[in-house]
Image 1 (tube, rainbow, N blue to C red):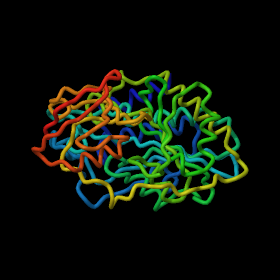
Image 2: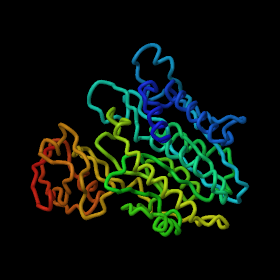
Image 3: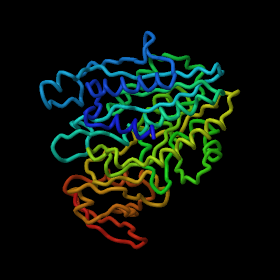
Image 4: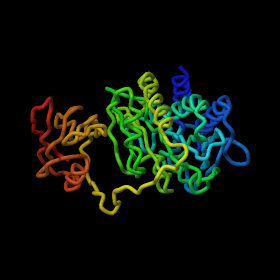
Length: 384
């Protein structure tokens, strides 16, 4: 299966975690360009190349001094990789995925041990493999033109996609939609999230029509999120993000290729094809602003519980998808699958109420937390 071959290459130790500006990122970019060429795409980078370079003025924040040679191979310049499929259609769809990751994990890692290579098989070799698969399949869909983009610098703060939106190499007036694939390699129990569904009024119905395999899909309306679709939403382009959920290997060296669900990736690719085939090629998708979170009202949290939220859970409360060792939740005996319903004096209806409740605590505080485990209420004594 070609998608697994692509994930395996990009998540190999030889690429040393593909951090922005590193030798490993260069190798990954060259590989993606080679695959684009094999797929008969046209280069759509700078000066007739596959690449769009961007240089940051600050030192590379993800550089780790493993050896003199490693440090010498780091730079402040990364590259987007861009290919184009021209069908002579009136409108164009962008399919994107970031290919950078955390290198040896000096910044952004949730790994508690010594520096180690973070291969990022799910985050986001899986997304890159997905757009390469779709490039193969979409040769035969003539209703749209397609741009395939592998972004750099996403882990640093959407650097690559922001730069492209400021310096586009294609005509933005012809773009009807942007589809972003970030962490699509761990489909579990047929559950998936699609974010940005409020960026066009047609998304919910198109998603419903294309879901022919019985996926349980959690839709998030906001066009603002921690991935590259955000950059395009801010350019008034209908943009959605496919996501199979967070997991305990997120931003850790354990996010490796043996944990990828290849059959699940095929299911998602099938759905995306059905989605594109259901889109109206004659009319540009209507764009709508979404009710986005106001950064000024985001709770500032001094403490952490040490849990990973289940972003695919749509019931009452906040379900835990992972517990970090040595953190307050772990020390209190909490487990993956617990659903937090009360924290302190607040009833936790969802992740937003949870964050608001957590912001009230300070280091050294003690409180009581109530969670459901197998449908039964349990109390936990929490010390931050």
